[in-house]
Image (cartoon, rainbow, N blue to C red):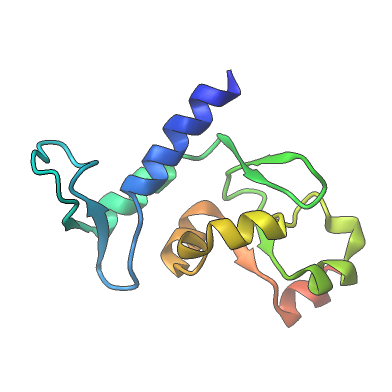
Amino acid sequence: CVGGGAAEGSRAVDRASSTTGAAAVVPSSTAQGGSSGASQPEAVPLATAKQKWSELHGIALLPLANGNVGLLSRNSPFILATREQQELLPTLKHRFVSTNAIAKLARYFANDDFLKAMGIVKFSPQVLAKHI
């Protein structure tokens, strides 16, 4: 069932949200033992956040430019690119993350540690040169 898996996957991503520092910020409402109604973030070691992110590997969770949903895996990296950049390599629609998903998940895609853990790369001259 895709619905249950996606919901669980999104909760795991929310728990593994990270800043660019050495710790991820996790809302206390999702952390175990969080009893107050206020959602005060708490720091989680970056290694723990990476472990949480790695739990998402193999889950079909990433909307792609070709309309399919990609499996998160470091073995076949997906590419973050603008619509214009995607038009430069039309044969890679199956590897480009949907621009709508990029907009909605911007806080995760802005984190280089998250991208590395998920096997996602940003469009660059090197990516363009490799696939021309």
